[in-house]
Image (cartoon, rainbow, N blue to C red; front, side, top):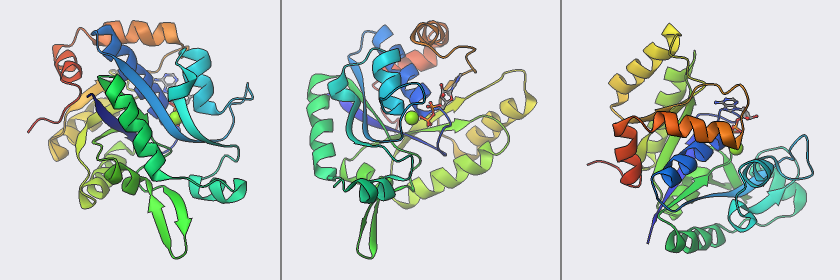
Length: 240
Ligand SMILES: Nc1ncnc2c1ncn2[C@@H]1O[C@H](COP(=O)(O)OP(=O)(O)O)[C@@H](O)[C@H]1O
Ligand SMILES: [Mg+2]
């Protein structure tokens, strides 16, 4: 039985899909059987009739359709609103079952969330079922993807505080659009590590052309870091 890890972010459009693709590629390079799963997708890709992340995982990364998605809703809005608009009933139990199926077939299952931890998935009477509730129900630890630039300290601190409030385990951070020449980026990573004492799994640069080939190259490059290798070979497990 493998492990499943939830990939969340400090916001939308900050690189969850990029980080998930990178981690999956790097895990496979180390000989692990890894897969991605994006249970809830909203909004179509610009250049395609496919959903944005489905387009990326299937058409660009070449992933199998069966594991890339479950609920597809066309409006590019929050899942709770998209499901109301499209009369889609999201069943967390079904997502959990699928994650368990994928775990039985893989060493690591990377589950990409929609938006961040405080995103509502289902509105039921006076209650909202949130992304953090799905994470708790599926008993998943999270990787937090953050931008590296101005604002990253606030965004990571608030996300971590919210995760801790809801007893969600954090594997570590992936910083996206990281520029090692930028003093803000370098100091943000240092400050966040010092304040929160959580592992920095990887710092991903901005790729001129995001493609499968360039992610493969980036993974080969970053895997020279033994700490990253160790973390991935341990299935991104949380150090106690
Ligand atoms: N490191 C990067 N280099 C180049 N483009 C990136 C990088 N990270 C993200 N992007 C681009 O930015 C957009 C949003 O990234 P994505 O990973 O889809 O974010 P999210 O999944 O958090 O919504 C996509 O078009 C993606 O190709
Ligand atoms: Mg995404």
